[in-house]
Length: 153
Image 1 (tube, rainbow, N blue to C red):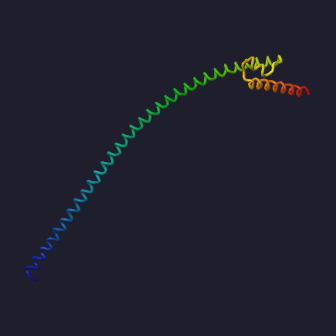
Image 2 (cartoon, rainbow, N blue to C red):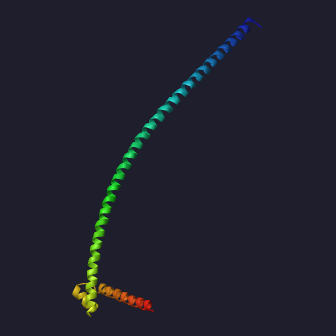
Image 3 (tube, rainbow, N blue to C red):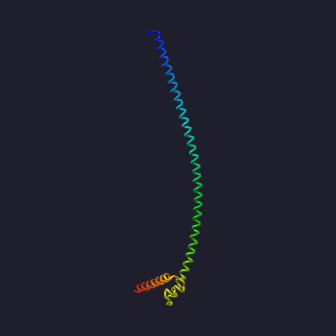
């Protein structure tokens, strides 16, 4: 081997050694960079979690406020509806009294011998309503008569 070959062989060994040194250095920097990347990702995740917790707290507070407002509104609505029911029950009671008075008048005239048409004209009531009152009265009378007859036996 000539001296040129030795020089070329030496240069190739030297280049190989330099390449290996560069690769080792490159790998170390990549590992250090990867470790830095992991830290950056971990910090980013911690910041994300903290932000999500803060947003969740805000949403929870809004939800609590919303529920309290709805509960208050529902309570007020229930109070108003209960008041309406009370008023309607009072009106219904008054209506029942008026109906009883009308029925009494119809039955009083019927017992005196007036026809349903005549009673309707005198009391300014619908003929059908007068007939209904009279029919119900007669059914009650028939039922009471049958009941007392079977009770006597």
